[in-house]
Image (cartoon, rainbow, N blue to C red; front, side, top):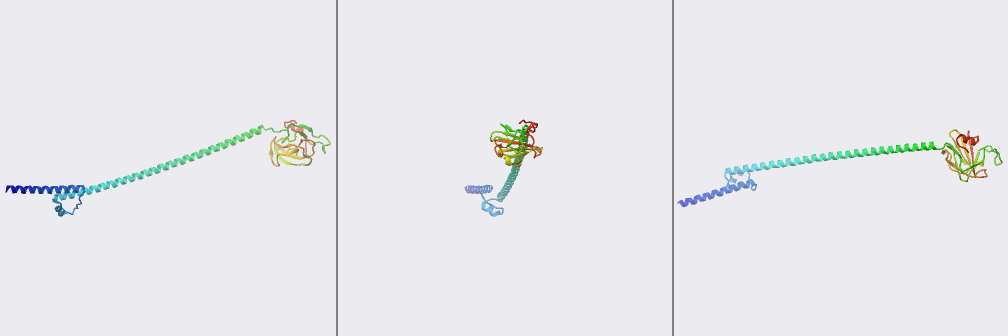
Amino acid sequence: MARHRSKARNKQRSTNRRTQLVGLTAALAATAGTIGLTASVGEASTASTGLSPSQADALTAARVERRDLGSRDATRIDLSLADARAYQERAARGTMRARGALALSAAKAKSARIVAAKAKADAAAKAAAIAKATALAKAKAAAPKVVLPTTGYHLTARFNQAGGRWAHNHTGLDFAAAYGTPVRSVMAGEVIQADFEGAYGRQVKVRHADGTVTSYSHMAEFDVAVGDNVTAGTQVGAIGLTGNTTGAHVHFEVLPDGNTPVNPDPWLRQHGVTP
């Protein structure tokens, strides 16, 4: 009898242990998410798992708590992602603003360089123009006011000289020189004639600022044309033999009124040169 009771107690203990082990295993599995129990399982779930009502309630509470925890974790993840996106957007806007500022700064610097280069070029051009004008003024000031009509010459006939070589008394000075020697304008003026003129041959006439006209005849060539402006010493032609002449020379005349010749000798002396 005593042995029978002992066996019954041992069997009961074994059954209780198995029940506790099953309940503990189920609770652990629910906590780890390995079993899918619902709140509506009720007594059927309790019977199938061998859980007591208190264990089933604990399992349901653990499951609800786990679900809420997962929901909170998901919400935190969503918020973290939203924060990250907002940060990225702010960073992108900051980058765009920085790039815009850099582009604006570069454009301003380029514009400043262009303005500086133009100002430098304008200043250089102005300085060059001033230098050129100064050089011209110096050259003009240094240039002779009056020169003789040629060089390397000797006089072969003077004003009012009589002779069978002329229809009337001589109307100018004859400067004889080697054929081709340059003939020069004695003063600044404007060329009013460059043509072949009968007995005078190739003839150039220059009208000066005071209205006086000087004439150069018997030349071999023309080096100016009507309308040209010349200075004292500008070549107008070359010593030749054209027209009525017996030797290479230039016949030089001075016509104060443009028509009537006067003695070139005193006129040249009055202007600072001696023939």
